[in-house]
Image (cartoon, rainbow, N blue to C red; front, side):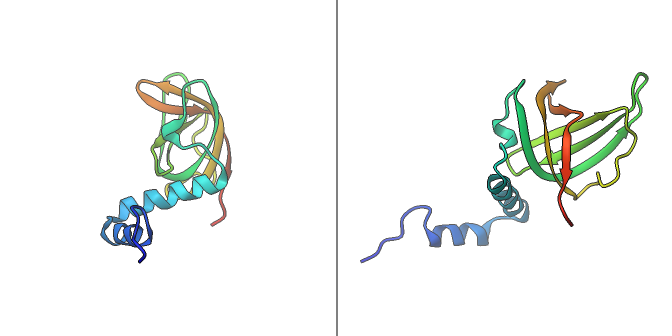
Length: 125
């Protein structure tokens, strides 16, 4: 007689059927990041050079007195990090809903997780 073990096919299927859309989306983003070999945002630590991938939730131009900045919130299913480009008003392709991979030094500024002036690659689509 075969028993269904916790985390088995039936358990995973029931979880997917009863989960809300945001939970399913977060799981899919996390799986994509794992396949790409990127670190989960939730596991990144201050000072590390990290590679993260996910979907841009928001993009905001912030005019500042000293230097204008373009800020984009990247969500990977485990958490969010703010990508900050100093001295930029706009970057073609950096828009909400777009998927991208970013690499840079992980930091913390005013309680937010940030990567300043990251190298980035836009995903197709």
